[in-house]
Length: 116
Image 1 (cartoon, rainbow, N blue to C red):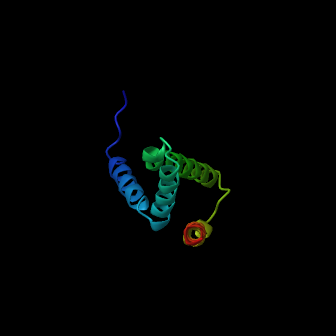
Image 2: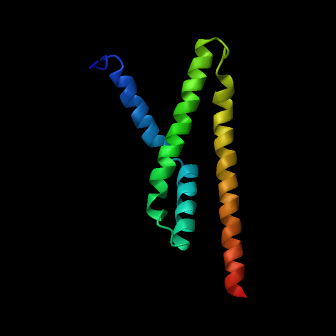
Image 3: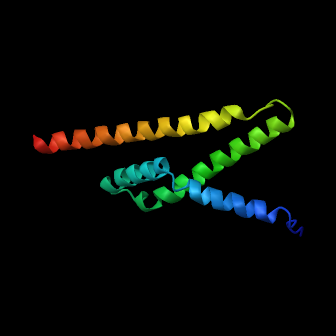
């Protein structure tokens, strides 16, 4: 059994801490909240597992993208990472606004149903 080299351990701890911080972003909380409410209203047995399934799926997607970017960078297909530095906050904002819009439309739709 191979042990983890000591110089990699701080990097692994840092990645874990940044991943935990990333999980508390408002767009993640909004998506998990709305998915949990949807499944809870439908009395789905998956309602209590929404956060776990979201975390597993999101973690796999982020890890896959990171591995692909690293492989492409190693092959010199990606020279500068300025696009990801610029695009990341914009993509997060767009997703957050999209989820907030859907959530707002759902609330408006449900409130109209109750008024009638």
